[in-house]
Length: 198
Image (tube, rainbow, N blue to C red; front, top):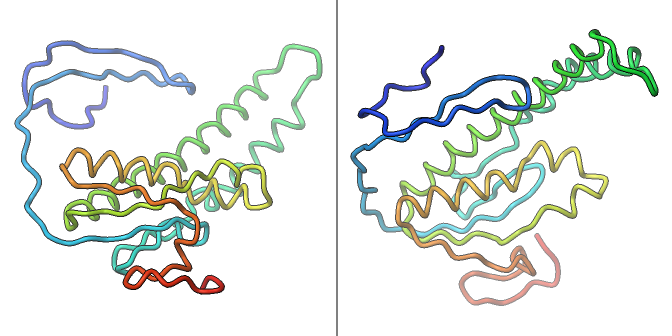
C-alpha cells in the first residue's frame, strides 16, 4: 500500500474502488481544519487557446501547453502497433494484445494525470493572488471534431477550466463567466471592438 498523504484525523468511512487499469484505491473521509484563503485584491481575465492553454491579462499567469501527450506519443504508437498486429477479428484476443492494450491505456492515463496536476497548480496560483476572475466560457467540444482534435486534447482546456472554477469556489473568489464571442477583439477599458483579432 502506498499512502498519498498522512490522514489529519481518524477516518469516519472509506471507499475502495478499482480504476479502468485494474489499480485499487482507498478514499477516506476525515475531519480537517480549513485554512481560510488569504485576503487579496486584484482581478484577472483568462482566455483559452490551443498553442497556449490559458492566456491571461497578466502574462506571468499564462498556462502554456506543456505537451505531456506529445512526449508519450512514441511509446503510445509502439503499443498501438502491437495491438494492431495481435488483433484477432471475431475471436478472443491474445494475452499479448491485452498487454499492449493495458500499456496504451497506462500511457493515456499518465499524460492525463500530468496535465491535471499542472492545471491544479496553475489554478491555485491564480486564485491565491486574485479576488475577481473573469473566465471565457469556452466549450471545446467542437474542437474534437476538427483538424485540431489532437492539439485540443493535449491542451486539455476543459480540465484547466474545471480546476480553476473549483479552486476559486473553494477559496471564496468571485468568478465571472464571459461569453466567448468577440473577447479577443473588444477592449476591456473602452469596450471598442476591433475589426479583427490581434
